[in-house]
Length: 109
Image (cartoon, rainbow, N blue to C red; front, side, top):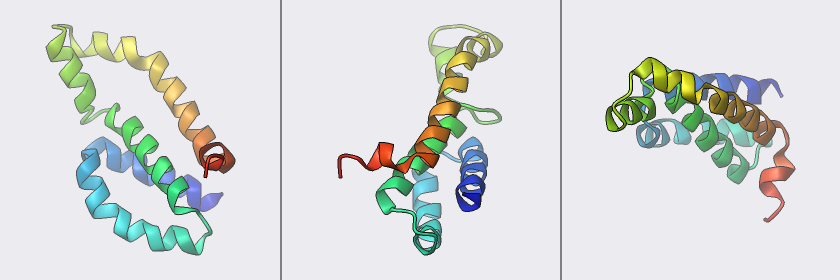
């Protein structure tokens, strides 16, 4: 449980400063062997990784998805942040559920 908590914090910080594809190329080869030693399934790790990176991609300082939406719909960035905050909270809860309830993401395998 401690490994997963530290992994989530690391991925959220990484998602806030890097785009998803760069993070996959740089980080997955590093964390995959570590996660295997803690008994985390590779598929479950991938789902955690993508969900946490998407959450990080929505948060400042980068928050590229929000900047694109702000530009496309001609709204201020503060307005977009305020409008997406409830969904950000739901996504945070979803990432926690995905992380700690592995059967949810692994039931079809």
